Length: 298
Image 1 (spheres, rainbow, N blue to C red):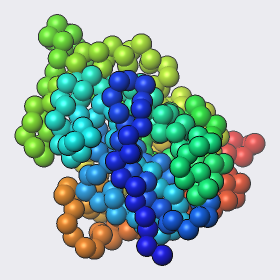
Image 2 (tube, one colour; image 1 turned 90 degrees about the horizontal axis):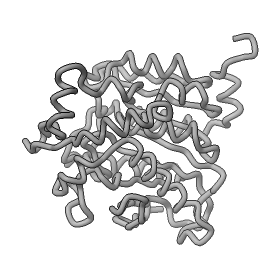
Image 3 (cartoon, rainbow, N blue to C red; image 1 turned 180 degrees about the vertical axis):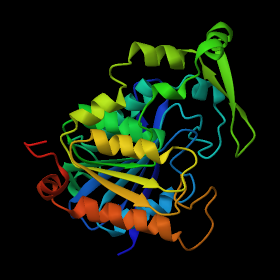
């Protein structure tokens, strides 16, 4: 059966900007486990091969949901370009957590259009890069999450901020700019980003959140990732109570993909990641916990 797609659905978030959502699934009327995918920093739901990844999960009988964070800089009219750079500058980790919450709540509404096609009690999160940190914190907060998968995830939010004189200069100017290497755009970060982090530092402590997890966690990372150190995967593996580590030889930060993705064939390392993810999701949680979880003696 071919997979069906419902693209660019507008979900109202909590922060005055829409969360744009895609659904990819087999329209067979059968209830399927839900997989919600969160993109990373300077990312978006239509980046590279994420759509093809969604199709692969759908072929594996999952109800796949991907979305744009409301303040990622894209707009419903321009889904692959950062046209709303003010929104980009106003983004922060708490807004991203709220956006993910909005998507989860929306998918589990009793009147959800495809309620007959989902298993509400089998909801799983995947996060890439910064999105890995967001999904991890949310999985620790929300007991509706069944399994967590993090791809090339960061293990600390705070270390991403400047320190000393650079931090002082940011506070004084009120804005910092970073270059988007793909487009050459100067993208702003308003000082509220750091302020919001400081105000929510305990909630945004990935180490603390990871240790609180009560579900199986697949930690996937490429050995050739130059954007996020493989050591961060080691941190997550060390902290999570039931982690399975998937180190992929010669895989970079985006597992061999790029934007735009025009090739017909997916990279071997990316296919491997998807297959191992599907295997993980298809394995009974208790079985995973028994195999990878901490015993009473630990």
